[in-house]
Image 1 (cartoon, one colour):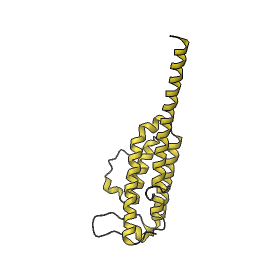
Image 2 (cartoon, rainbow, N blue to C red; image 1 turned 180 degrees about the horizontal axis):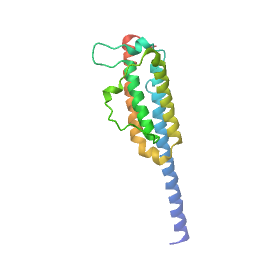
Image 3 (tube, rainbow, N blue to C red; image 1 turned 135 degrees about the horizontal axis):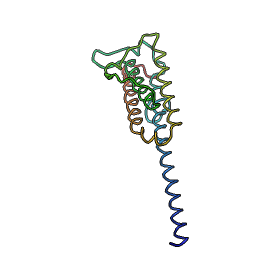
Image 4 (cartoon, rainbow, N blue to C red; image 1 turned 90 degrees about the vertical axis):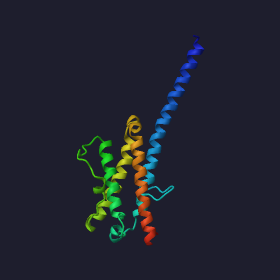
Length: 171
């Protein structure tokens, strides 16, 4: 092979490597965008911060006559799963006890309500920080789980907005 051929192959290799690194960083940016959109950045839908702003405890625990969940139950459910995933992501101990999903829908006391809201906000912030600081291999390994978690958060936030609009509690 001539020197020109080797140089050409080297340039193509560097170009492909740079393109791959850009794609890897795009994965991080997409995941961060999803996390922020479900937390406190309003793009296509209301994030949790907007959906829960100004909500009273009485409104949060209101429940219709069906088996539908209250807003408070939805918040504790989302908080539980986001926290469990965050612990796993951070390689922290997670209980090996089988979790019954229905048990994650809890109604906090009035005293616990503001703590519950702060806890959800804190966990969402911790997720954003964890993704910003994680290496790209971990981001790639967790991409599907994190995007599913974001969709789950968005789904339940939509339920919260629906309840608030239905009851006339939406701004």
